Image (cartoon, rainbow, N blue to C red):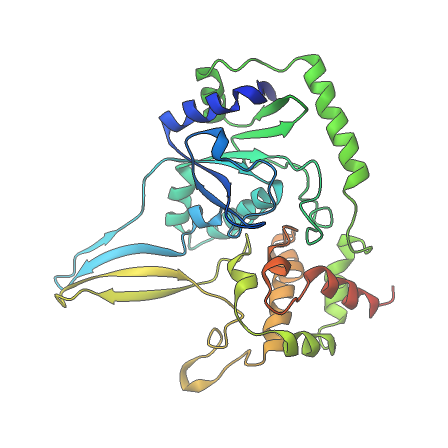
Length: 342
């Protein structure tokens, strides 16, 4: 693995040089304790010490509204996708984990070429968390508090410098084009100190071994807890819309005013909406909010483990942070664990 360093005072120069090569987006402050990924041209616009953004960087890989094809009455159909090169700076390890989950799903047959082509045009720059974002985070539980690939460059704060881990050829090309110096032995020692300190800070947040969570959920499928949660839920869909790994969508055909041409649009959908599981004839397979909330939790901690051998929760805390009914995912896991005796 290759490591370079950039002094913090030179971060603005790095962003400026990168913005000459491609569009750069990074976390920016938007109101009180709210952050969003937005286009930047200098480091002064970036919030380096931020809690997870309102929407995850997923929005660049799978936009909220995405034109899939255009069509016309003469049977002409043209695929559509954006080809703009984008660098996303400052992606936390929890969101890197989310991108990895989406990559697994969309690489399955039938392959989602729109997602993969967008991913090819996105330059990913991760940023390590040296402390917890806030009380909603549970990244240690799902082991997403440490870098685990999925990036071109990865920045770690080691004091007055950022240590840069170069993970791809494109990342190496960018670093070399800017003549960024290689890391020294003292820089690597500083990284070791950061990681040692993180071992003291980041602990399992719910006091149950993570490998037991699927077993717990298997035993509590019929728990009364789901009804209690369902009674609180207002089915707003916030939890799934802000989730880094939720990928459910709907398709909409929009006909233009000429009645001869149109476009097919992919739109984010949510399993928490009452209409999501409704089929022809009015039958609804998850009509109750309790069933939809249970489904959401099982999709993150049970079904994904059965199919992909990994959690699809990244511990970012967005669902709990944005819930209008104050439903807290960590509290759910604690309560179901209390019902099961090993």
